[in-house]
Image (tube, rainbow, N blue to C red):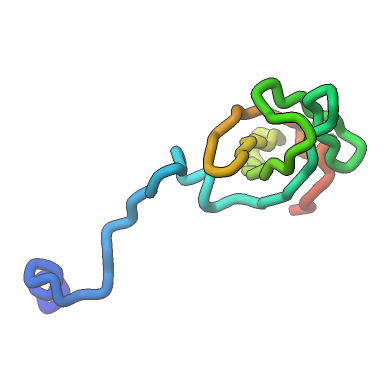
Length: 101
């Protein structure tokens, strides 16, 4: 009861969880993050696995936000450059070889 009253009176430090721009999903917040440089063919390499990033600017660093899914065996790799979402790809966890669960 005290907690609900504190929220009503705006005296609580607890806030509703909201995804703030530029992020689009919870997957952009709770993920593994890696930076990579885009080559001349708009590809990046991570553990000898090449991924094509069509919208990426050449020779710029982009951030990979990786969301592994143990049940499906796939990881979703989300590409970001300076707060701009570039796209996403699904990759097998075994090919990505980043995290061992």
